[in-house]
Length: 224
Image (cartoon, rainbow, N blue to C red):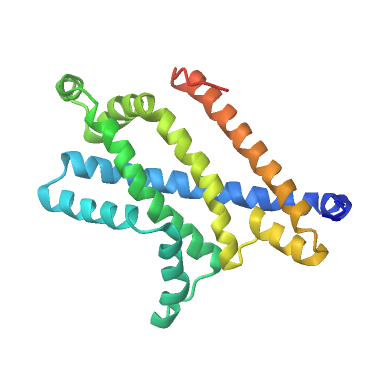
């Protein structure tokens, strides 16, 4: 093998690649927090809602957790224009990711909601708390402590999964790496640098989430 490695051109594009990493994080943040909001509603509906609502949420979760996120985004990107609905590639990716993550987070959060002791809910009702107050002051703190680790892991999965947005022309980290490699023809160098960037992102995210869990929720998650 007479291949000569040359990282000069790739390193010149480092600011451009880091800008793509920021887009990847933005996609993950939107998908996680919007999905968590929908997932919390879905979890509460599955546990405390009427039977028809439970079945509807169950069908939603089954569909989105048993089909690939890539297929779901493909549907939004290619099928909706035939129905006269035109969305930008980034919008299609965000909607697809939010709907997909909401399904998974519904199940994760449902496990936390089920773990809330009935005595705590009855005590809150005795104190004449409204449903919103019960959710805010009783259910959410307990659920967060119980499932903080799975939620943190799911966020890391979303960061890495955001790379599929490149297939739809979104210039996140992988999308920009493709642009760079097709320009300088240094595919090995480009994607080895991108791999290091992904490792750094996930390490910093894991460390930040572990420290946040210890500070805000008293969750003693492992940092390393």
